[in-house]
Image 1 (spheres, rainbow, N blue to C red):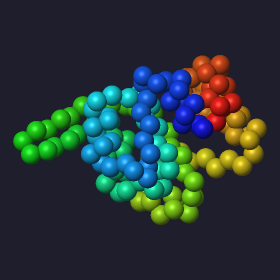
Image 2: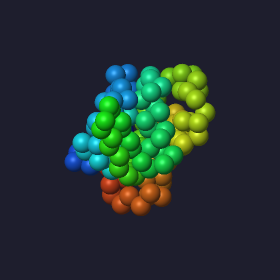
Image 3: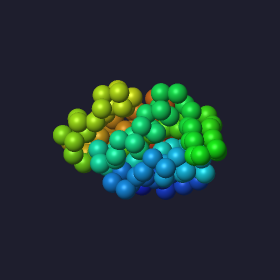
Length: 138
């Protein structure tokens, strides 16, 4: 619900990726085609390593590069990445270099989750009204 709320509000500025079906080529194409401000990934723990490596490079350098035969594409991009995880044990098995680029929150209580969400989004200079909308629609 969290990702869908962001995607609904920022439809033109976001892309949604299903981690269970994501490929490195697919993610690269979406990044080049849409240049999103928000990258929304569902079930990141199920994403394959080559796809995660695309994201790792983006998070480390802010650069997206694709090389196919004699064609190279490259661009700077600074999206916010939001991801969800359904299996924390599988998430822990992901390479530390990738996990070190993420801020992970595990929240059990609904009200606590909404409060944390609003506070965190406000830290990122998201307007209070929008932060509350996102938190309510998670």
